[in-house]
Each structure stands twice: as C-alpha cells, then as structure tokens.
Length: 559
Ligand code: TEU
Image 1: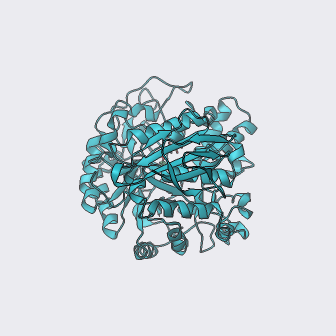
Image 2: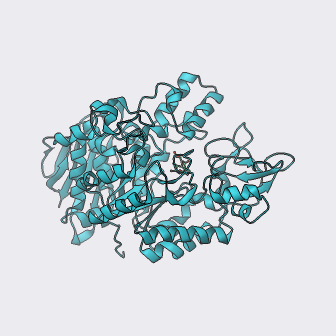
Image 3: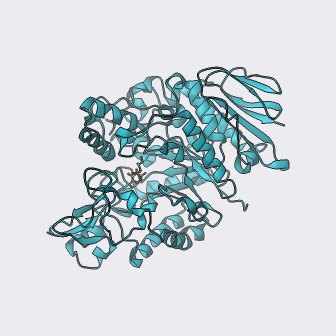
C-alpha cells in the first residue's frame, strides 16, 4: 500500500456554532476556535474538520450556503479565518472544511438570478422543470419532508428541485459551467492552505434528470428521494473529474459523506485510485434506522451492531480506509446510542472510546465526545431548532403518535442532541458563552465539563488523551494504522474484541471489551505481554486469559 500523509492522523469535528463563543452573542466563533487550539493539540488532534462557516441564512445551520467565498459574519471575518489557518499550521495541524455542493442557498446570487430570469442562463445551473397536469413534475419526498419540487417564485407552473429544504436548491451538475465554477472555488480554498474537505451529501449530485414518477413508498404518494438515485449510473465520472481538477493537484485529504453507495463500488469510492481518500462508516449507525422515519427506528441490538462493525472493517482490508465515528452533528450522542443503561457511565464511555480508537481506519472525534457528552433532555418541541427534527416530530404525529410520544422520539434521535453548546466548565452556560446560547445547554454541564475533567486523571477526557497518544506512539503506530483486523470471541455474548497486526514486521495488539452485564473470562488465542491501556484500576489477567467485569476493556500487547 502506498503510504499517504493522512493515514495515521486523528481528526476532530468542530460544529462552529456550538464550540466556543468569545464575542458573547450566543453563537460560537472563529476567535473561539483559535482560543481552543492548544486544547485540541493536547488531545493529540492532527486534522480539524470545520462544519460550514460560509455565509448563510442558516436555515440548515450553514449547510445552505449563500456565498462560498465569504465567512458568515456570525462566525467572524476572513482575516480571522486566515489567522486560524496560520495558528493551526504553527501547531502542525491540518484544517479541512465542509464542501457543500449538491445544493446552495436560495439566497445565493445564482439562484436569485435564476428566479429573475427563469428561462435564462442561471436557471440552467439548477433544475427548473414544468409541472405535470398542474402538479409537481414528480413525486419524490425530500430528506427533510415534503415534495422535492417547489414553485419558482412568481411562476405558475414552473418548479425547482431541492432534495433538502426548499431553501436549498439543488445545483445542476450536468451543466459544465456549474462544475467548472465549483472546481475553481475548491481550488481557491486549497490554494489558501486548506488540507482538504469533508464532502457533504455527495451521492445526490447524479440524478435521473427525466425525473420519472415512481412507485410511492408511503401513503403520501411520494417516494424517499434517496431511493430515486439507486439505479442511476455515472456519478463516478463527476467525482473523478472533481478529484482530478482539484484534490489531486493539492495532495488533499477528502472524506465523503456517502449514504447509499452502490455496494459493488467500494473500490471506486475509496480504493487506491478512489474518488475520496476515505468516507465515513455509517453502516453501524444505520442498524438503528427505521424504514419510514425516526418513529419506526430500531432499538439498539449489540449483536447486530458488532457484526456490522466487523463486516465494515473486514471489507476494507485490501481496499483502503474508512473513517470511524460514534457520532457527528447529524446524530444523537454515541454514548447514548451504543451504551445500554448500565454502561452509561465513565467506564462505559471509556470502553466505547477504546474500541473506536483502535479500529482500523481514520478516527473522527466529534466535539464533546472526548468528555462523554450525552443527549440533552428537551422538554418541549419549541426547544428544538433543527429543521429535520421538526419534520420528524410532525411525521410521528401524522403516523398516529401523541405529542408526548413524538417528543420522546425526537429526544432520542434529534440532531440537536449533538449540537448543544460544548461544555467547557461549570460556570454559566457551561463556559460556552457570556450571552444567551442559540441552543439549550445540556443541564448536566455542572458535572460533565472540560475543566472538571482536566483536574481528574481518571476522567474520560484524560482517557481519550491516553488512547490517542497510544495510537500515535512510535512503537504501535504502524500496527494501529496498517495492521489487519481479525474479530475475536464472536461466540461470547456481549464481547467486542479484535486483533490488529501486520505480520512479522510489527506487533500484535488485541482490544477486548465487555459490553455485557456479567463478568466474562476470555481464554486468549495469543499470549498477553502487557496491558497497554485499560479502563480499570487493575486488569485481572494471566498470560493466557483475562477476566473482564461488566463495561471493562483493555488494549493488550500480545505475542
Ligand atoms: O447530511 C446529509 C444527509 O443525507 C442527512 O440528511 C442524513 O441522511 C441524516 O442527517 C442522517 O441522520 C448532510 C449534513 O451532514 C447535514 O447536516 C445537512 O443538513 C445535509 O447534508 C444538507 O446539507
């Protein structure tokens, strides 16, 4: 395998609106991020992924961009952004930004010009279509609800396409002018010194532009828009062109947000010549997805989750690397998803960390994960901000759930769970802001916060520091990065365990974790030489076996 600069890196996602607010307006800002770079360095972070900071009306929290060349004034100025880049370089850290190019904002100059002249050049940069029999051109349901077609303002029978909210018109990738302008913008940022991009919702850029009416998948007569992409060929041509015109020229690191990839195209997407450096592994998360929405989401099933994780790891062995997450800004908090009630404590959180940080692939830590932030109790639907949550609340009501039940469903699943302000200390607003935060602060900030965990050598934060340092230790880095993956103890209930090794040239490292309620005795297939890290004060083991109490984990150097 040809080694790349990003193979052994650790990444951290910042959701800027909720990270750190220095100017007191209740919204995080770039100056706040700069003030925390030493903190990120102390955690061992190499790459920071910044969720969108571009100019935006914030209908979808910055994923609706009105100017790709400007920084939103809520976050600061371009000069401050340049300072951020310079300060990161000083610390030998890389910055990647979000590339949101399936759609822009309806406040983008192109869309305004398209609306002003709906049969002119700018309308060609979007999908404008005539209605059919006085209705929308087709019957697709947008990701955040409703029809993907909305009437062009001022027009009777002309519609534009948006797979997300109506304020996020889809860009027409079939139009070479659009592609050329996007590549120019991407290169502009890379020339500035970015190390790459996280690429948003990218599977959506290739559509069947005949937009045929399709068999509905629900009583509303619509079909989920993602399903309409299933048999559409040709996305590879767009993605290879994008890569060739931009990323390749800068040796950039790219991570795709790819849902619904055709399963036979793994190598095309993330193989050595793949469209992206890596892409997120959403398979373990998707084991809980419902067919219709959050209201029919599945309960967490440890066996299904573990087997899916193993499958993801194994399928990548001779292909490349996936990016591993337990959460992001679109998910509820990982500790609340994957840890049963009895494990939702510091032991359990460290166990999840040990598993995630020793898998094969690029680890992405989401802000607050390193202190074990949890889902937030939202007491009323008015406390949510997220468009998707409001849609799913209504979907639950329409499916016959009561308001109390719908609120409970959203409490479990809402994207706002991960978007509440970062908990820096036990002072007002968790030390996030001196103003009124834009979103509720999780009331548990008095006990779960960075300042308290800095002082406690056994905190979740310090465990993350140690496990990150272990992964980067010169003695083990090669194994953690390039080592294979062999699942162990598959027949043992509640056990997640695997061996990482790369043959003669490097050492053998085994991770064992007991997600079960009862103690487990594991007879080891390899001799234990040393406990590299564990979440207990004293690991009970001999050279041949190890006994794990409930929620106990260990990373072992073996012979
Ligand atoms: O998410 C893309 C996407 O497809 C999501 O709707 C996803 O299916 C869902 O959140 C899973 O829980 C990206 C961004 O990450 C998200 O924040 C944006 O809202 C969306 O694109 C539109 O840009």
